[in-house]
Length: 143
Image 1 (cartoon, rainbow, N blue to C red):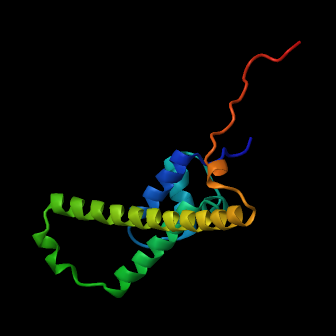
Image 2: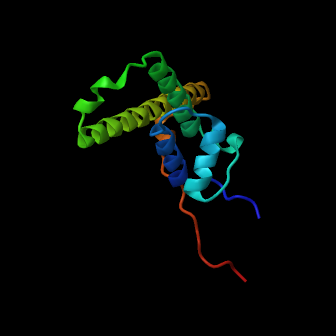
């Protein structure tokens, strides 16, 4: 039996995992960590096929490059309390998640622009676009 598809919740868990990543990040390391976290093994290709995960990984790579370029001696670490360090870490995770959300929002806005163009080109009115979905008859089949 194959590995089940990633659910929306699991995609979000992977995004949070990548957003909170510290240190070197590679797809191999992410695949290993996801296997431990979700108790399912997914390939790099499967993970990368989800836009949110792909963007989170790209943002983590950018963060990693920035940190290595801005590497400073940790002399001021003594001034930071444990609570402050946890709060700073949480802020970094939230910033990373926000970047993923912004990227997703941009992708959706681009898709809506394409749909708008195509609907106008084909003469579909706003009223037609806003019609509710038809009801589905889930009754018993006739014999």
